[in-house]
Amino acid sequence: MAHLDTVARRIGELEADPESLDRTPVRTYWELARGRFLRNRLAVAGLMVLVLMVVASIAIPALTGDAWRTALLAKVNAPPEVGTTADGQLVFAPLGYSDIGQNVLARVAKATGTSLSIGVAAVVIIVVLGIGIGSVAGYFGGWVDNLLMRFVDIVLSLPGLFIILALVSFWGGGSIWVIIIAIGITGWTLAARLVRAEFLRLREADYVQAARALGASPLRIIGRHMLPPAMAPIIVAATLGVADSVVVEAALSFLGFGISQPEASLGNMLTEAQTYFFRNPWLVVWPGLVLVMIVMSASFLGDGVRDALDPRQR
Amino acid sequence: MAGYMARRLVQAVPILLGVAVISFGLIYLAPGDPIDRFRTPTIRPEQLEGLVRLYGLDKPLHEQFWSWLSTYVQVWRTEAWGYSFLDGQPVLHKIAERLPATLLLGGTALLVTVAVAIPLGILAAVKQYSWADRLISSLATIGYAIPSFLLGLYLLFFGGVVLGWFPLFGMESFGREGDPVDIAWHLVLPVSSLAVQQIAGWSRYVRASMLEVLHQDFVRTAHAKGLTARRVTFKHALRNALIPIITLIGLTIPSLLAGAAITEAIFSYPGVGQMGVQAVTNRDYPVVLAFVMIGGIGVIIGNLVADIAYAVADPRIKLG
Image (cartoon, rainbow over all chains, first blue to last red; front, side, top):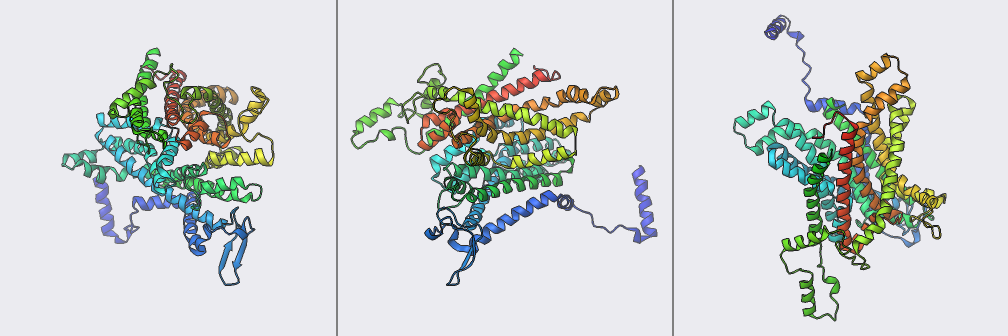
């Protein structure tokens, strides 16, 4: 009963001197996590680079209009120019023009937007499928778990990238939605395994047993009691998943199966740049640089989020 | 051991069956039907019906699946995996022709990964926080962030086009077929583009594993009883640190196989990966199906090898 004595002593102290009460607000889990995240310089830099890319990919096409796809014969492989034309129109091409006279900066910005949207949309599918399958396997266990995990084994045994290639080529015709769905339905296995592992750990926890004893439905137990504490690894996997999906999309478009002219993608820009390498070698640099920066920023951000959400894992 | 291997092989059967169902489904659901390529302006409707009956397309789906699968497992028969739509060659012949090239590429990439990443990882762990550790870790971060297809493209330009040191495509030069030096020369760029990302991942993993072992009591004991640092590192710590690394081999084989498809396409390397990508482009369904099956079999063998190697390397693991 030592702790009761401590409490009683503390009450006595407070009655004697009310000013000794520590009025610092209690910091919640999320406030602590944000503090830990903000102290990680690399992670903050990664987040800033990604935010900057999102802003640029919206702002630059908005400012330059159709420049990202307008092919100007007079400007084929033209050097950089910034200024206004005689009739007062804004010309903003600090990276010059491509082999068919498209504004490279506008095109890189548009491509970044397309790639990131595909990455985020594919990750939404991955997370939904991963949570759905992983939580059912982890919550029910037994033969359900066994069956679903064998299904995961089967999907993991398929040559994923090649299946995506086949799906996009057979059904796609360059459709952005087919690319998103193809990446999504082949990529959920890691997310499902993470959710399952967390659920297997949580299902025996006292508070989950208590909820079950009180008659909560499986859906309520999963959604209200087990999913929130299992979110940390899902958020980390989603962050890294965006980068992976962006790379897959770029590889698809690079091989000519994904997005094609006049639409812009980091992958198809690289394919075009390949042909005109000698006349304009910079064309091969910019989309590649953006791609590497997306992957690196996402990986720093993912590491930072993991350390912030789950300090035990360090 | 034999019993364990047998059991693992039996466990692989349902997974392989699942891979077969999914690959069959992929082709079955693909737009267009198998007799489309016979539809010429001069063909009579009853001839088309005859083709439908010949290929069994009028039978229910499950019968089609079983008749396909029971033929597919008879790999000793030339026609078991069908014929390429493109050139009429038996698919099994085409694969047998190209598989050695892919195994050479993937195997070399795996060897290079092991040979480079393990020393780097050890160095980084033994000299933790030194400039060498920082350099290796930074390079690993960068290497991991460069997608292998992008690296392949850049290597092709700088090593092949700008410097002109390495051949741009293929596996052999005309007139020098079978010359090992020539083949090795052709392998440099594709192997580098496959291996860099793997080396980056592996070296981090080796470093972490080595650090964990270096902080254990038995390592301190080895130091305390007066062994040289060299002996402690390589004899006591390294052997234990490498055990978890073995699992990586099983994980690396599938990603090398998947990466090989794109790398082979970039370097026009005559392996199964390039054939697979071409088959997708041409909707050469029998070859697409074969590539998916080969991929599945490769992954299952890779995992099996890793599990067995793990059990052999770590006597604490009982195979039972």
